[in-house]
Image (cartoon, rainbow, N blue to C red; front, side, top):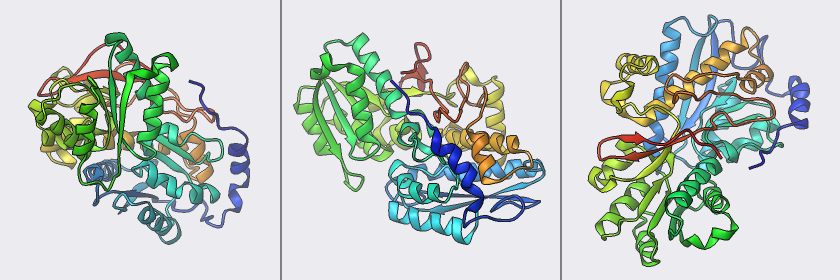
Length: 400
């Protein structure tokens, strides 16, 4: 797939950045000799509240950094507000973070629709919107160079599933359950693209749902009725759990592929039923904390020590905690790269110039690389199957 590049507007924005109405002190807004103030919104309530743990983990990680002396002598002050996964609320809270709290930048806000709601405002004012908990391809557009996602591109994951289906079940009849927004629609398009025009007929049924829908039961019944023997679930944890459980309960056992953002044993598979989830396939880019193969891995030990001290041992197996740990580690690395130049321009410059950074909980062989032409931090994934207790990776690292 041809990646869209970030070019002219990026450079022009950096040149003009000094004229921003949000300009601050000698280091830039939100930064002093002792503090770096960072803003974020998270769904601590609402339909995506299962992801609120990510924000709590990131706050705990920055507390750990601060206890060790901070970043170049400065403490990180994360101000994380509840947006309920509601775009209007995200806008309201983000404006408060920028205009009242005077944060240096926005970090890690969750959701495609929520981040899209604030993207124009943040870019017009040349405020970094970094490492969003959303698919990178949604935000890799030349007009918005101050915005960068963290998750693998939706189309990358979709292509990986399409390749696997083509190689293992060339005669598959595919049904797709998808969230009817910037999460589900690009993913569905990626599946079609990955199958190729000559195999478009493999998709026999598409069923969408709205975030506000109480259940997806009727969609699952309709997908079963289509004769599909393969189900791709592009959903957040609650509807994903409903889909897995409903399919099992009506006696439908297709080969199931689950969007990686919902591949949580705690938030998705346990509510669905671990026995009912056995055989589900997803794509991963990090170490599974439930997999004993990592118990002596230095990255896992670093993660476990953090969780044990700053959270609770019960959260050692929560993928949302792993995600928050990874995102905060990457953000800390960028701030360290900034040195004493913590202007918004340099924060963005460093975020777009990461070289071979290895995440503590990243899969072996994966490295983070970004440039002003490539806003895709994570580009490789590996397929993994749920065995009833944990995820078992198989095959090699894949990309699109």
